[in-house]
Length: 302
Image (cartoon, rainbow, N blue to C red; front, side):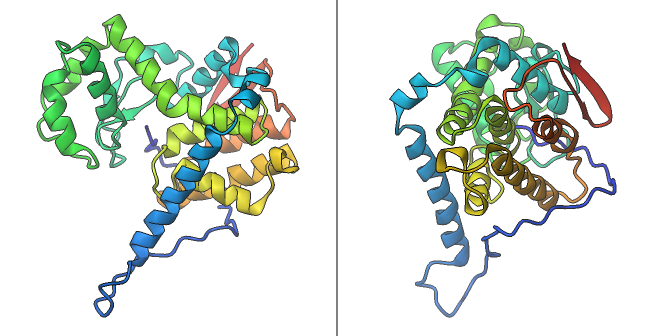
């Protein structure tokens, strides 16, 4: 998952939400037998993801009875185009199959259609799953190095050949399909499913998907599942009888604050002049035509 490294120190107020409940990790030499605050913190974040996953699998009949929403082919295409405007500064998301670079965000190499990263496990998972089906692919030889650098920004064992190998493999149709399958498995499907269970329409499903892409499905304190639980502490979702617009407004506030807290000065226009604009226009079904701005660029979909 890609976290953009663009920094614009614009005079945009940082929203501070009241639902933050994480404590700074501390160590105590006097009570080694007690769980550390960091351990408790991680357990709390894992609980957030576990609860969400249980909800996600709780009611297949309900999901099946709902409109396709963002999963409709045209809307899914639109979603990928909006994400690409923020991730790759283009609407042509298919041009990113072979994209790979280190953008200096501490995640190692960022690559592919959804911004898989060598430092965040998703790129490793993609290559492992692809290699299981296609053992003779051009990336398989880098699996030991990918496992070694996972969780870091290191290039050890990857340079100088990995970027060229990625670009070459991206020309193979099977690897393109593997990228799309991993995008759906790890990001799109869980985000859309959970949004539907929260009673959200197409826009809300997209807001969850973009948050999952940017913040990741892990259990970091700014991970998607933790941000969702913080929002639910402050506002009822539509499935709980709350206002859809009010809930999404709170979710975007919390997400924006998390982005700024992680990297002060980070550009948040993917929220401020894109998703927030759709929301305030009342476009809960993400109808076209659409116009939005990201990083100062204007994008339009007729």
